[in-house]
Image (cartoon, rainbow, N blue to C red; front, top):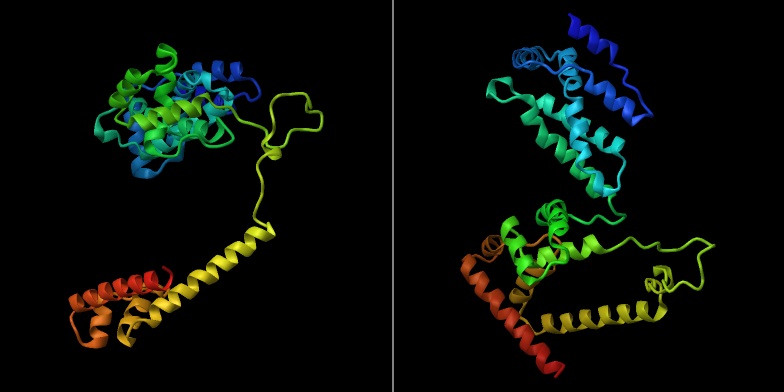
Amino acid sequence: MVMTNALEARMHLPIGSLEAYRHAVESISMLSKDEEHELAERLRDDNDLDEARRLVMSHLRFVARIARGYNGYGLAQADLIQEGNIGLMKAVKRFDPDVGVRLVSFAVHWVRAEMHEFILRNWRIVKVATTKAQRKLFFNLRGAKKRLGWLNREEVDAVALDLGVTAADVLEMEKRLNARDATFDPPGDHDDDSDRVAPAAYLPDNRFDPALRTEASQWEAYNAGRLRLGLDALDERSRDIIQSRWLEEKKATLHTLADKYGISAERIRQLEKNALAKMQKSLGATFA
């Protein structure tokens, strides 16, 4: 009863002051193993949201402590804590008390996952890690570089082996980590004498260039003409097979064409192969 009253008294945690928030969550008592198990069972069996709230509240201090480990990314601690709290709530929703582990051990992966996703979305204007290997390198290579400085070839190979990625992935992520965001179009008070040129000054937009649009149109017409010549060199059945297999929006299968012509799918495949070879030879002779 005492713990319940303490929780209710702190439901409105302070906002606007990170230190006040940390002090408030540190003052909330942790649950014992038996209390945690009982609350989790009631949440699972009865969908009791009050129990979910108590489980979340008693672990807010844990999220705040994890967030301190991500100080080096230049992002607000309050935002990291908020994202971590989302991960904590997801963990509470999925927690099974009968598995035999404490909630804190189960929730750490959810909390870190939400923080990692937030960091990757906001660390740079352009997302620096999209693949699984890049995400792994982003959070591990930073720590390695603090010890190693600029990586030589042996160190690149060692990091790649340790993390189970390729050396090319390590080099690419090192390049991204050392790059900086550039303002595409600097403000009006930009120093004209600066040796840095904004991308807006040298990145052309050729989408509406009349010469390029005309060239693309003529090239498309040229390729269409060559395709027509190649098809004209085929007999009617072979032409239909090529059109059905390659040129229609909904491609026909070998078995569909086999049923249409009353022959085997293997024979359709042979006809298709011969037709493509004949088209290639015909086009080569015409435009040689």
